[in-house]
Image (cartoon, rainbow, N blue to C red; front, side, top):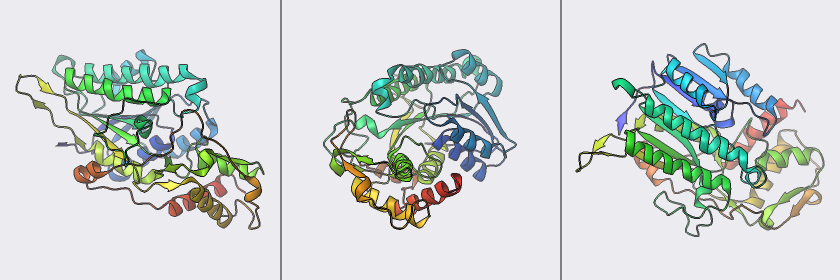
Length: 355
């Protein structure tokens, strides 16, 4: 691996107003103040835009941060950004997220996850035109959903992932395939990261922990899928961001093969807690922390607000990350406990909604 110093670099982060993206911007400035960060986000209304604006507002304190409102599916915009700012490192987090939404709104996934990612790859490719140094490392978000209905656990990046059970998963797998092809053809160092169920303060409202909290607060029933027999590898956002920053600083080596052609400088890693939690236990900890934070009253009747229901289309019963490669290559393993993470979420929720 080749080491990259973040200091004095230009870093392009797409999806910068997103949950992971906004936290990543903060982390980058925490460790390398002299860095320039260009953030792109379309601020679409897949979920409450005011939450994206709240995250963005926090980023405006950094003088070296430039925000561009735009869609990565807009090829001319992406070309302009690369020509104007000449990023050294690109972190592509912009994507249409969500498994269930992909069943009813497939167009959004094709636009953001396929066309958008293709535009990023093309811009990286042309960053080397006329002998320029160009992009030193492309890091992009994949997803644990690529493992589909694989029965073997924990999920390893050595496993075959040819059986996606949602369009979302299929688009993320295709990102890995496209990146591999571009790495091979144009010698672009690229690393894909398969994220496992990311949660934390100012997260996505479509995620279970956030949606459950909203419903419980409104006195509505929460539906627990697969009768609570789901296991999820919940990963706290700070752990995800720490992993991303470490990966950004170590790019796959450019090496020439025996045929005189470049071997693809390409890698894929899991980032997960590698401690899957039962959904019912997860809900139990969440309710305790919501009471502790004062989001819900101490005498809240959870049993009356819980409903066990069958599995949803596109969902998988288990997510479980094998993080051995991440530990080996980057000396890092996510470690935040579910209780600590949900406590921070509950405290943030209380403050944000001023309950």
